[in-house]
Image 1 (cartoon, rainbow, N blue to C red):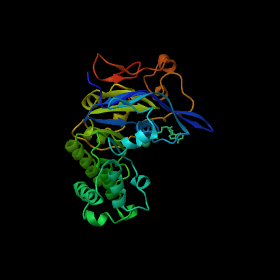
Image 2: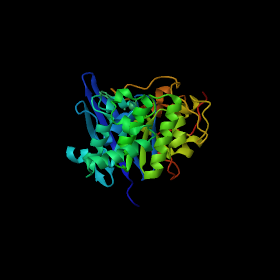
Image 3: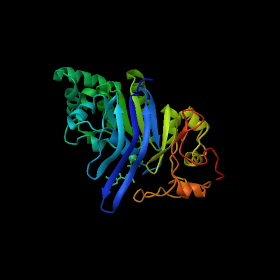
Image 4: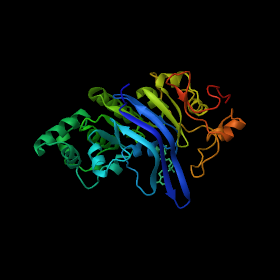
Length: 332
Ligand SMILES: Nc1ncnc2c1ncn2[C@@H]1O[C@H](COP(=O)(O)OP(=O)(O)O)[C@@H](O)[C@H]1O
Ligand SMILES: [Mg+2]
C-alpha cells in the first residue's frame, strides 16, 4: 500500500491556560489521499481549527503544545520539522485559506505585493514573470480588472474578492494540499457557493487534495469525498461522504442531520448550520470519563459514562465510529 498524502496519527494538542489545561485535540487520526477532499465537520469548539492549524504548526506555542502523535506529509514527519523547513512547505506544497482573510492578509501591503512575495519566496522568477503569473492567477479566480487590483490594499476589496485573493495566494504554487478553515463562513450565501465552486475547479485542475473545515453539512455533501466528524476534540465518525449521509452511525452525527431536517443526501445539497442539537459542547478543560457525548445522548448507558469509546471500523469497512451502541437512530 502506498502512503497517503497526509497521515495524522493519535494527535494531541493542549493549551496551558491560567484556568487549567485545555485538551483541544485528543487522539485524532485520519488520512488524506492525493487529490481527495476531506471535510472536518462538527459544532463550534470541537477542535476543527486546532487540528487544521496543527498540520503546519501555525498555533502559538505557548499556550499550545503538541502533546503527542504524528503528522506525516508526503512521507515526512512534520511534528519534528524545523521552522525553516516548515516555512518552505507553507504556501508551496501546502496552501492555507482561513475564514477571515482580513486577519491573514497584511493590511498595509498591496494585494500585488503579497501575491508576488508569496510566489518569489518559493519560485525562482523575475519580478516581471511573477507579476504576469499573478495577473493570470487573479483572472483565474475571477477577480475582474486584475492589473488594477494589484495596486489595491485588502480593505479596498469586498469580502468575496478578498477570499478569492487568498485562494489565489494559496494556490499560486500549485500545492499538493490545501487546508481551508471555514473559507466561506464569513461570506454571503451566493458568494459562498461561488467561492466553493472555485475551490472545486482549482482542485480538479491541479489535483490538489483539500482538508476543508466546515460546520455546514450542505457544504460537506457538495464537495467532500470523505468526512470526519469531530466532537469535543475527538474524531467520532470517519466515512466516505455517501456512507455518512446514507447511514450516519454516531448519535452525534445523527443529531447533526436531525438538526437539519430539510438536508437531503449528498449531491442534492441544501445548506444548513449546525446549531440545534440539545445540550452543549462540554468544556475541554476537565476531560470527562467515558464518552463526551453521553450527557447529550438519548441512548447513553452506564458503560458510555465510564468507558471512552474508541474509533473502530465497522465490518472491516472504511466507515469508522467511536460509540458503544452505533447505528441506533435516536427517537428525537
Ligand atoms: N489560544 C487558545 N487558548 C486556549 N484554548 C484554546 C485556544 N485556541 C483554541 N482553544 C480551545 O480549543 C478548543 C478547540 O477550538 P477550535 O479548534 O478553534 O474549535 P472549532 O474550530 O471546532 O470551532 C476550544 O475549546 C477552544 O476554546
Ligand atoms: Mg474553527
